[in-house]
Length: 322
Image (cartoon, rainbow, N blue to C red; front, side, top):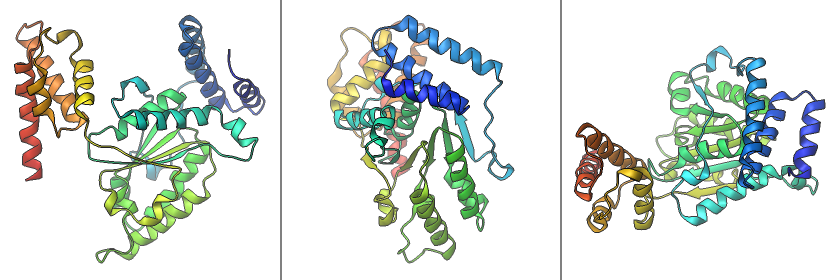
């Protein structure tokens, strides 16, 4: 059964004519029923929501002309079980989801749910995928702000564009991902800093402090050492990602190769060669191995087959670092 807070939120969104909020809560209820094993009911709720959304036409974000192409919108289908990450990080993400679903209960006690997250770590370790997972688990759209394009294309006007983006965050309920966040979050004390970028960072600090929307704001960076120290205390949670451990690599490879994996798979060498590779690099290597097997009319992938594509990825990574 849905929670009391979900029922109250559903009724409130109906009488305030907040259609997107109504859809969001309905999808959250569907996800709750699916976790309880009521898959038929969950599918019925999702079907009804999908049909009603089609009747009202596609959801169009009211992007100003200047922001078109800078904010990419998607409806992620990736569940939290797809994330191969340490248990500690998974629990922290589940807490974000749980607090979001129980936000009315927290608000009744003068508390707010976690909704401003900073994700840090090497490229390909799951930061962007985390934003997709959170959007899917909460039944929200994911809006990715391409920060590097925002800065390079609109130098001199970036703060004004940031204001427009935060207006969208307030008006359009969803998960907003600031990717390559260090492009605007650089340390103001560095010698090579310019006045424009200081103003941009100051504007971001002001906007995120003032933001009280129900949207989830996620900032991701590959280089946390470049961030201004003032940023860290603006986020409700700061989560650090790293390359997968031996056990995580094994789980990831099993998940990716699935039915193609040979029965007597020689793990020792595979785990040794894959050490130091990111989740994304292992993903690419496994998919390359599957494609090679399909094109060679092979039904199974041995450790030797996977080692070929893993070494290819490792040599590319080494060349990039060099």
